[in-house]
Image (cartoon, rainbow, N blue to C red):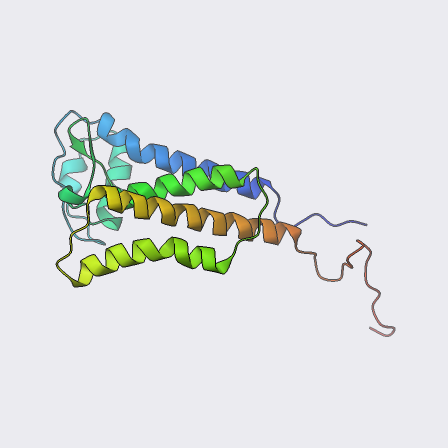
Length: 188
């Protein structure tokens, strides 16, 4: 009897759905907050420094801005603004989320093999841009940040979907290539 794969194609659709919803959610909060009310959220990664600014927000903008406050530096000069409000995540993160959503959507319909060199080359720009900026006086611009984030998001989504397809295609233990079951040695 044929066994059911451990991961179904639904896993790929789930990744696309989650990344698309999240990418959309990042754009919604600035549009649902009074214009010009959140103009400088600059802070430190891992610290919730702007909680008081989010107290009056409705639940979805509050939740997304709260997550951004804890997971992103939210430097105003490294962020985009919508409706006169700073977005909850910096330009690089916005690019990353958009790349994850776009590539996981495209990869849902195309089977491919991923080359490790492609992964390294795709992640190199974000590492160089962010790393050089961290250790020197070099200051990237938001176009470069969103571009490197977008490329990294695409690569990471393709890698994730590749692993999901690989798990789906993996034969369960004991199954032969032709779908039959291996026979256990006598006495076991």
